[in-house]
Every structure is written in C-alpha cells, then in structure tokens.
Length: 504
Image (tube, rainbow, N blue to C red; front, side):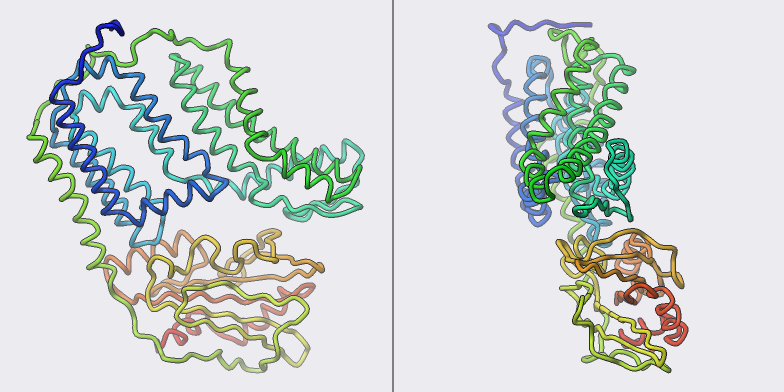
C-alpha cells in the first residue's frame, strides 16, 4: 500500500512528537554523559583513526535516512513502550561484559544499543519499525573489523607476487615482506586494504537499501562492494612496488602516500556505483514506510516514566561494574627474574634491543640469559594486580610489539610449549622468535580471546585478579632451538607467572 504526501500540505509536528522527541533528546544526552568515557573514546577513534574515519559520516547519513521518512513518520503517533526496555538491558549487558573483559568493541556496541533501546522505548513499535533501517545502520558508528587486517595482508601479498613475476620483477616474499633488487616492502596492516573494505561495507549496505528492492540484487551489489576494494588494493600494492622497481623506493612510496587515501577510496566508490547503476530497481518516489503493515502498539506507558526507566536500567550496569570489578590482588613490593639452572644473566643486546610494551603494568622485568653453549634468550614478565581501562594485558599496541615499533611481525610460527610463537624483524635486518603466554587466575593461555574470557570470569565471579604476561625471545638463526633449551630448564611457565605475582 502506497500513501502519497504533498510537500505543500506537510503537517506541522504534533504535540506527541514534540514531547517525546524532547524526552528522547534529553535521555540520549544523559546516556552519553553517563557513559561519557566510551562516548569520548568513540569520538576520538572516529577523529584520529584512518581505519574508522568513515564513521564521522554515519551520523549525518542516519539523519538523512530519517529525513527521507519524515512524511510517513508524521502520520504516526509516538508512544512510550515498555518492551523497548529489553533492548536497553541488552545493551547494558553488552557494555558490562566489555567493561569486565576489557573489550572496547562490546562497550561501544552496548552504548549504541542502549541509545537504540531508548528510541524504541520512547517512540514505540510503529515508529521503531518505520525507522528500522536507520536504527540498524547506526551500528556502523561502532568501530569494528580490525581483525580483517591480518587476512587481508595475506590476500594482498598473494595477489602482488604473481603480478610482479608476470611483469618480470624478481620479487621474493617472506611473510608480509616483499623484496625486490632495489629494496624491500612491508605489506603493513595499514596497507592491507582493511580500512577500505570496512568503509565499503558501510557504503554498500547504504546503497543496497536506498537503490534496490530485490534482495538478490542487494546481495550481489554488496558482494561486489567488498570484492572490488580488495582487488583494487592488490593492484595498488603491485603498482607501487613496480614503480619502485622502475624508479626508486622513495619516489614510489612518496607517490603512493599521496594517492593512497580518500582519493583512492573515492575512485573505488565511484567505480562500484557505476557498475551497479544499471540494475537499480527502486522507484525514487516510492514510500519508505508501509504504514499498513506497522504493528499496533501494546503495553504503552507514560513517556516520562519511559524515559526514567531507560535511565534507571542503563545506570544499573555501571553500578554493577563498580562493585564487581573493584577487586585487586596484593602483589609483592618487588619482584625478580627467576634463577634458571645452567643459565646465567648477561647484558641485553645493543645491536637490536627488543622489549615488549606494558605501560600499565604494576611490575615489569626483562633480562637476558645465556648458557654454556652460547645460546642467549630474553625473558620478559609483566604483572598486573588487576585489569581495568588502560591497565590491560591484552590491548591495542600492548604486548610483544608496540604501535609503530621498529620490530615488525613477519609471520606466525607453530606453538612452542603451548605458547603463541611468531617471527619478527627489525632493520639490519635482525630476526628473532617471540613466544608468549598469559596467566589469568588459574588459566594459562596464549589466546587473546581466552584471556578476555578468563578476565571476564574472574572480574564478575571472583577469584584471583592478577594478570601476568610472559614472553621468551631469542634471535635467529637458532632462536627456536635456544628457546626450547631455555624452557626445558625454566620449568612450567605457570609456576614462573604465579611466583611473579606472589602466589606460591
């Protein structure tokens, strides 16, 4: 059923819209104040991160989507609706889990969901159904997708090497490092194309909704919107390295840094839109909301009561968090590196020093050991009495490699004694192997996901709060063999971790 509205006869905003719109605005502002740290964190990420800079456009896009539906919305009456509080509670639970486990994604997702729940609770099911796509599209305000960087690095390398060989460039690959006769290139996380894939996903979803009716065409356009930037990024990487082969590394990378950005992304967006243009099947004049299919509101409540209940439900979760996560273990005033049989401590490397980065740790130690055969190994231990914001054993830029480190991850290696192993390199070049373990409560793991789950368990359910990171590293060419000998003499890693936290 299509309902037409004449722009000349657009009805003025009714009293219910002014009242409930004002309450919704006030509740939203109070939610952003209540969760001010997370709101500020989101704004900082949008403004400073090149990966999530597109999030700055999501708010205006959501506003435009709502404006498109203004005529149909004017025919609806907003009401307070108690079931919407379940969405607020779901968002609060997501925030609590993220706060307890130290997962910013869950906190940010929870905040956006609580605001969505406020919209549903204060405007009712009819308005919420009419605004379903704008409400869901607002989830693109949440920064997500960084996990794509590693796989897309490998895809970019896999595309670039055959193209270089086809062009007659003698290129060799080692993990994410591509070497040609006059230099080498790192296919870094920033060069993986992940930021364009994430932004193109948001763009593709928008175009699929605005320009298509058929779900098959929507799916096809979205698939194209994801595949094209991956291919384009591979061609860009090939072009940069090929240009370096013909000229110099400095000239090629300088040009790449100028082009690689919103200019490149804008061209890809235009290409994708041009390809999908001929299959657009949505009538520009069609109504955005089918008023005849909207649900009849039940369980309505007073809008002022609805606003008060939204804030009460949302505020319960920070209160719960302050009670559940305020515990911390008592650590020794000083800790020392362990004595290891048949190994003795020696000065650290001056050729290519390496150290993990734990700025929020309560204790941090690193030292180098050597044995009679000349093997040398570095042992690093970071200890936290408890984990909280800014004091996390697993976080962005924290751990064996810091952000913008001189050391670069080349590739992963098979686990060593249950620890996660990787090969890293620094200018020289110097290579080394790093093996990592994490001790949370009674859990010893090398998995970041397991660390977060264990942290969530001990913070919400109680138990030992201390978190310990243990890293063992050695320079190549015999790094793995040296680490294996050292671990055999060191003994169980969990025992070393517990001892460092004063647990016997």
